[in-house]
Image (cartoon, rainbow, N blue to C red; front, side):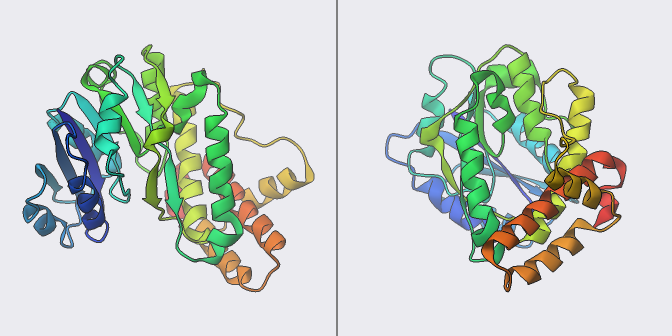
Length: 307
């Protein structure tokens, strides 16, 4: 049996499409259960899950928000399956999603990643920057050496129970956005298990970062979390977070030192995107995102307060 673990925060609007997709799996799909961890804000999620009759669904409800790591750990600990599938609540799995994840582990224990197929709403950010950035990300992922594929561990992935028992829980020290996934992928790799990308598991993802403001805010959180990862895993071999010297990088470095909230800067850029030429707008978005990430990295303890 497989277990699908779904961490969900304010997910009442996203869960119906996910549940519809899981209920539409092909005939002959291996048996599976769905465990949804409602992370402290209900807004209709619990009633939705209680009324779900098509699937073997269980819910775990936190009385208050505890964060994605706590939700993941609670879901994985409650799982009964031999293949454990992490599936975020904003994914839209294909009809062979469960079968493909299960099949990917038939040759032995390992970690399997399906990249997101990001679906953007029609925003200036998406057209000027988001879609192109997504294409670059996917191209870089598929061209990566096998030894560093763990860097792409994210919200569409699976492991065997053997790996969960060997590697253990997601690390609760990661409290802001990002890097708890990369940390887990690295720990799988260091435990001696293969981590690989599975192109047939690419899954549509209703992306949440649809504006420069949201993307910059997440970049700041991610930069702070990267500093934590580097402290825990100093020999992981990541590229240097501090950019080298060039005119562009000088702008990034300089802006990262200004005590300006990333979301506020992002909102100003979003307003300008409606009137600026596409190329200029792309550069402004990139500057906002890269400087926010560097600012969060340099001042990890203040990243949360910078919003």
